[in-house]
Length: 319
Length: 174
Image 1 (tube, rainbow over the protein chains, first blue to last red):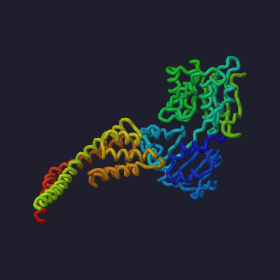
Image 2 (image 1 turned 60 degrees about the vertical axis):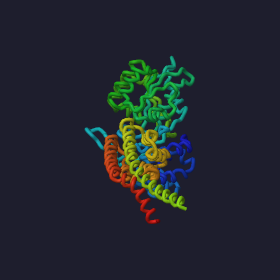
Image 3 (image 1 turned 120 degrees about the horizontal axis):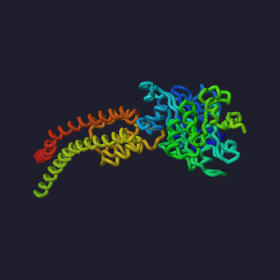
Image 4 (image 1 turned 90 degrees about the vertical axis):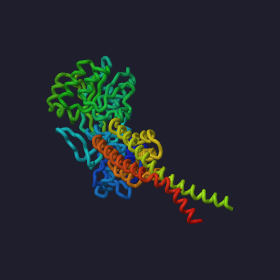
């Protein structure tokens, strides 16, 4: 999936790096930059660029290489400059984001942070002495979820059925959910519906200062950085959604909230980390939820033909 | 000929007198600038700790709040930060300090107080930032008090000293 254009990466991500790293990244070819999924900086370690499943580095002379030990070693100053740029030299303004472990930059790209974690009463209070940064390139693929959308429309009345997207990490479930939100709320070939995205980790809409940086459709409301269970309940009470979409349910309260939404007549589409239906049923809460008939369809994703490959459609509605 | 001599004497005395008065005015301006600087930092502190405004924008707003030459420090720093490209607050702040040093009557001891803050500005949580701003403002207040004392003790010396020196030079020349 060659989706991130060279210019977008150069415009939206590379300016945040230190001048040395900018120099190394800017000279890379368009094809290389278009495949970048992650860029990782670790203090004293080689610069790591992830292209799909491949790990690459860039040697100090500027060539990309698969031999990681030859790569340019990220210095403490590179990390400091990068943090300074990402936070606009204003860590105080990003305290909440830092507590959650990441900062979202314009363009919806997520920057994960590693360093010394300061805790207070078992809660993360801050991170300081940053030692690692991970840029995850946000991708949007218009039309990626067309195959799923066809499957999750009720054959009789055309309404959306409650759906679970099942996938291991890095198989494209966030991209699918984002495109589902876009397509459902823009009503391609069907009536547009009110969608609420409960985006706890700011990944679905990639909000920067509350404004979505990625296209999630014209009739989509976003509850950014909001805990999923709380967000689902808030949405029902105040935003009159027809569809609620959220990423990675997993806690007991998430399942209770899903049940509430379904009982309120709202369609729910959410994702869950699992490799298959069997994996899923090993978890007691979700097993109960599936047992109660809350979800009608499960879509299992894999990376066999690239992220977002539909491996299996499971029908729990017996059709 | 006498008329020319009188004019020359007048010009020498006026020249030295003007130099002395300018010196006295510099002392007074330093006090004003230190006070303006302290107030501007108070404004910046509110932007940072109460409004959570990102530093480049907070510096720009502070520059709009105050007058030159103090505004130069904030304007220059904001402009440097807005370029991004890995510019740190230390580098941006030092650029601002170069500007204020060039166009103000502040002494090295005054700008040193500001320079000490460069590395910590913006790069910690709100509580740490509050402590930092309190510290800088207190140190600037001390500098301001010292500057006021200096105005009291030296203003007359500069004001009259220039004219007296002019007269002495005239006497020596005659």
